[in-house]
Length: 305
Image (tube, rainbow, N blue to C red; front, top):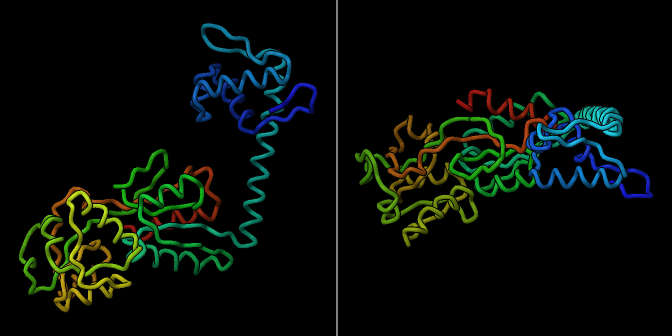
């Protein structure tokens, strides 16, 4: 913001807001287009006018119109915005040439059955690109993406996504798995209450899916009866197939084990077990070309079916 007696310096957000108001003829509509609360937008306009020492808008019952000073500022504001857009494009292109890095967070379900294949095929055709991949529970991934600490998040739709934009990847049903001779193998459905009462094979401490499941047992006042906690989904499946206990995992992540008859899946009779995997981000316009390409790759690939 500019100050009286000093060289004029405007916040780019102020200029974007000013253009939106000028083009819509309304402070209210301009605030909405620029994602500002009305009170904040009005305060910013007053601050700009105070700094300049002249009014930018004539206020009327039907909206606002530009003053002479406002028309002059609009001309330069548009030029500045176009220059910033061009700068961003050129910097993005430079980053691409140098080897862009995409920060990607993913929950356990997608890491096991989707992300590995998608990331591998994406990187194979882009030797200069790097992907910083970390595993997070969906709720934590949403927070980090919203705070712009990551470019993309692959999360369950059970998480509160707030104002984040999303694209659908695929269904991600959680099922109870047991050996073919196990006590639940012939059941059509089973509740989480019954699951916590039986010997359980789980994923290691700190695993995103393990934290997600434990969150849903807390209201029951119960904990899983762990016989062992293992580092990977395949290791858990081997233990369950050997009859050590039961487990809960995403159906897609254990498809091979179900197809060859090593394990049997029983529907988990809980509303939170029926999930959809989404890729989330703050806004598509804010994604780098590489992050946007990765998002498209995740959605379009056969792993998203």
